[in-house]
Length: 319
Image (cartoon, rainbow, N blue to C red; front, side):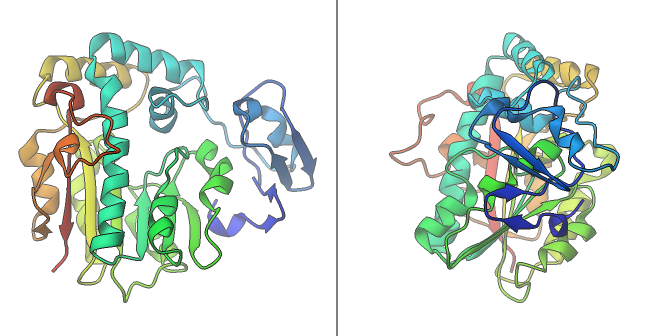
């Protein structure tokens, strides 16, 4: 499924043949090939969408925790399932930092997009590993500064796809788009993003709390380099990544909890995270814990300990 399978008509969202959860659908209407859903109610996640077409549904595997839904739960959201909540709570019991890290990371994303838009004049964003919408989203921050900013969101979770309506609520003069694609397929992402973004002009590549879900076997450094190679000079990389530098045993337990449920998570030390920025010009203060990267008056985690945050982040320019 790609962004081309997302036709829009009024408030109706084309979900094609996606199976959404189980139970009774709240506030939904079906027409051939199309589902209209009130996404403001978390109980929308149901199997009714499977009746929209006669094509095979996509199984959400609600019995397996998904990073986007676990992250949503830790941020206080409601779009998650028991397996996601169980994984999150086990993580909390093993490591108190697993509760603080998502919020500190989200605050850093807001500051990073503000910096790129207001101070560096970036007007195009490719956000890979978008996750479920959590205000303020990238387009809300960027278009709040320049209404003409263009944002392409990318994720491969059908639940995020269903929520794409919120992500596509662009300003009239700007553009947002959504791609159903996996970070491990950078060629497909780049080719699809070119339908919306001008790759002759600088682009900010956002890899926010996503690369630690790519194990070494899938060569995350190669993937990031391949994405950067497609971008023009003057583009930026904004990347954040979990680390076990401060609480190694606790984060090891979190990795094991995820692995037991079929999800890869690999926290990395600072030198390994720094290597994602090889060949780029790091913005001061370089790779640092996200709550220490230019905190502002809106930041909720500036006073938290390094151990509780445990997320490195940085922004760098492609020469």
